[in-house]
Length: 179
Image 1 (cartoon, rainbow, N blue to C red):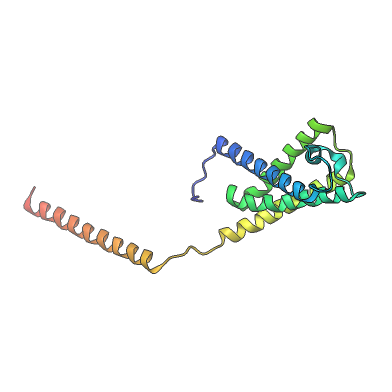
Image 2 (tube, one colour):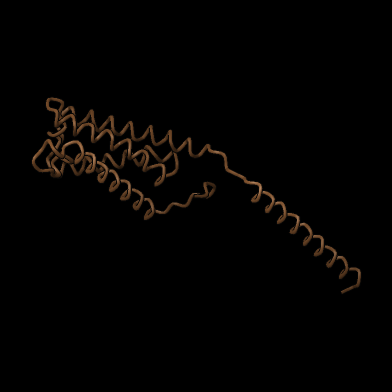
C-alpha cells in the first residue's frame, strides 16, 4: 500500500471489516473448541453470544474468557495485514466489538454481566493497543535496498540523463539549422 495517497473507498473498508470480523469469530471458534471440546457435551453459538457464559465462577467460564482474550490478540495480528495503518486500529477494533455487542443483544438480550463488560472491554483495549504497536513497528521498518536493485536504479538514471542530453543536442541542432 502506498501511504502518500489516501483514497476513501467505502466498499474496501466494509470488506476489511467483514474479513476482520470473520477472522475473529473463526479464531474464537477454534480456541473455544480447543478449550471446551472435552468439557461440554455440545458446542454452540451460546459460547459466542450469550453473556451468561462469560463467568468467573466456573472453569468452563474461565475457558471461554481465555478464548475471548486470546482471540483479541489474534485479531491484533490480523489487523497488521488487513488494516496496515496504526491510526486506523482503534476504529476497526471498536467496530468489531460494537458489532459483537449488537449480535449479543440480538442473541440473548442486553449483557447484564459485569464479567462480560470487563472481558470485552479488556479485549478491545488489548486488540487496539497491540495492533497499533505492531502496525507502528511494521511502518518503521527500513525499506531494503539490495545492491542489484540500487545499481539498476543508478543505471536507469544514467540512461535517462544521456537521453536528455541527446534530446537537448537534437533541439539545439534544429534551432541552429533554422528548422
